[in-house]
Image (cartoon, rainbow, N blue to C red):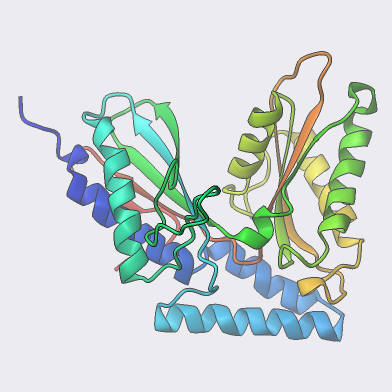
Length: 298
């Protein structure tokens, strides 16, 4: 039987290198537009100055094809693998290879450090790094999304196990308190991924995945769409502002996800993404065709 071109490691490797290069040098359209809108709407002089610097930096990164931030993050891949695709076992190897290549070619800052020896591997790979989230979907194509996650926004991600009796009211308070406690550390304006339910690990996984949803994509659940708007307005009412220097724009958006929970548990996770909300996606079809979903590639 002829091997499906989809599993060709070289194709996956090349696509993943391109995704990493795109992610760290060019923000997706929805993020660019949100930052431009934030600049227009910000009333604080200090905040507006910071947003202008962000926009200038964003433009320069695109023009020179160099990373928009020195912290190119820990590499996380999200893979939607078609159930009919062959050789899925090769994708993990290709993504690790691509991470090593991108570290040299883009370049990316080496950010994979052994927590016990404190040694940096030098190529952004290590135990469980890059981390790969797998999802089996119908079909025979493979969709790959990369999210480089910087340390500043990662350090303020929080999981709380609140009392079930507090419910949504407690969830709202927890999110706003988390934003206030984070302050300037996650390089605002931020995007918040908020998830409730499931369990400790499930909630944080869902919160991080929520960061991948485009800012201009409304939540299909009207109750969650309303909650997202309420949390967005509450977070921006804190006055933290761009880079923590004060202003009305502290977050660019809030994305909420949930899972059903145990009666005795009410886990709430808040995942922060910095203004450099880097992500890039591509789909590799069964005939080997590559379609970039988040960026224009000529």
